[in-house]
Image (tube, rainbow, N blue to C red):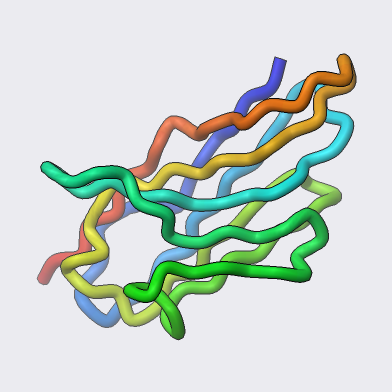
Length: 121
């Protein structure tokens, strides 16, 4: 079994920063692509950022380019999202997703439980 545990959400003022973490654990052979999505109330879930296996390629939503940075630590099977210059419109539940090759040989996408980020004065 594989589990993803997120941390780092919270309440922050506009212009502030937060760092989200998502750690995968369990029967992991290797982690592949990793990403962060978010879902605001009344809106569809949207991609925020993605990063390839060894961090060589990253992709960001236009709305967060220049403010957010995705990174990963393969030794820890962990993905991070550094969020700077936060805006009220960044308020949402943030979900991590990781494509994992399990020791059983199965390849699946796993999702974290979600962490609330609220940007408000």
